[in-house]
Image (cartoon, rainbow, N blue to C red):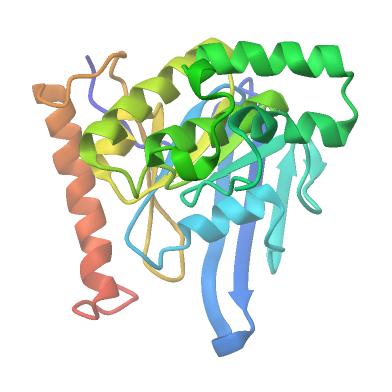
Length: 272
């Protein structure tokens, strides 16, 4: 296994599904510069984690890709088209699950299909397939209040998969879960990614989680958020967090993130 390597852009023959150039975001209230000069290309089918301390703009960047935030400057393209708002090509999974509490598991999964007017037989078949694949079949008639946090997140993921969005955007989806449930859901997500071939952009504070899941880890600086390191993870799945290769990369990323954490605490000048 080879050491992770820093890169800037993908070769010209690697077509970007998500292409970002010179992206900046300033929030008017308080004139906070959240993002500055972000350049990033993400090919279809890649699993990319955005990593960094609180305040580095990870979620802001994710929300810009989703179409929830309007950049102040720069260009953001998905499949060659400028992002002007949310769209069916991008599905979002939040930490808070965002399920409808009055709907059963099956109804939550089918909601987007119903809104799109997918024929009932086709929608029902897709829901049944996802209930089976995400091991939710026995909970199909339960309501979110009756489910564990891990089960709720499975339903949230299934709802995005039902719409067949080619891009999955995930904002710390496992952050509120206990360590055992978190690892189980990480393995589920890897299985889903490999089976469905989605492009995943995943926000996390966890260095180990980013290395366990991702093809590529993008480390962001503390405010304004820029790209500090773009690291390919040359480790085959399934990954062993106790291996020397894994821990070498973990030490490398830990140093990068801690530099930004120290800066965020005011112990280093922001221009350092």
